[in-house]
Length: 147
Image (tube, rainbow, N blue to C red):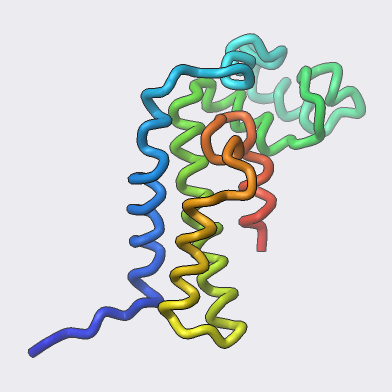
């Protein structure tokens, strides 16, 4: 008996594999400008409570050293203070966003193949490559994945 592959269920796995293939080398690439800032960020070494208070403080920018208000990313930097896992998280978020592109394509009436192609193009040619490759740019990917 031959089993059909359900494209809607297989697509996220395909996108995860494609993102690992396309961006896998970034785990071994040298850390660049914003990655290096993770080690020196002003919340490093503070307790979880101090960090949580800083994230909602009126003095957020002074306390965190951030230039934009992105408390989820700041929290990630504090609790995962290594660029490699943050880059891997970027891959995961990018694959999730490609799955969302695929779902939107299906909702707009595209056939599975066309929706998968749109999502694969989104994966291969992201609007901002630093959002995928640089650990401190996760705010863009988090915002895109928000329902």
